[in-house]
Image 1 (cartoon, rainbow, N blue to C red):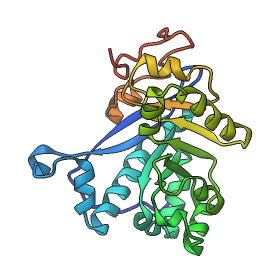
Image 2 (cartoon, one colour):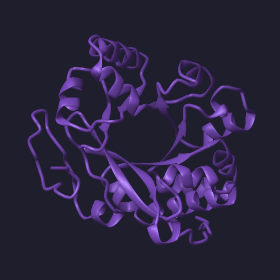
Image 3 (cartoon, rainbow, N blue to C red):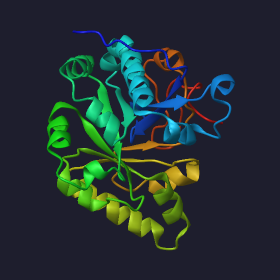
Length: 253
């Protein structure tokens, strides 16, 4: 396997967990965090990325890939997937045989592409070819951009709903019925849905009887990769929120 050469970016990376219905950790999303001493003039990470060059964004992606590859045996041994965020430009940066070989050799890496990416609303031959090389997840479904049209262009197995969709429907009188109908549609069409934005036990209980694949949100604490790999296996809840093993570093109290 050819190693990827990366440049130090000064970024810090954390991992946000996703738990299935049995409470088992099944995936983590790798997220970038700013160093206040180096990036203090940016209000948040979204503002940073909106100003970052393609070269820097690509370096950050490659640095994340290399970090995950270093711990790939832990992810494989524990059947935990890792997702990295990409945009339409960094997706094109993945059009490289060495990177493709390196990523696929880890056996655990997947890429989240946002619903508002133009790649998802047009039949781009390169992006369609890349979807054959990599596992792409549709991110932020329901944010009001591509929506169902994205599903007709790209082949996705995993869909992550936008956190604001949960928050909005949670407050509506008929929101639970609408969310259940949406998740049921995805379920019967064989999509695996991760519901983002779960910030309380009330959110989790509200979703209990719906056919989701996994939950993600600030109810569970993001952590460093060192903290993550120190716990095997990691469980969050098992039906009634009972803690079934030591996951104190991941659970918000």
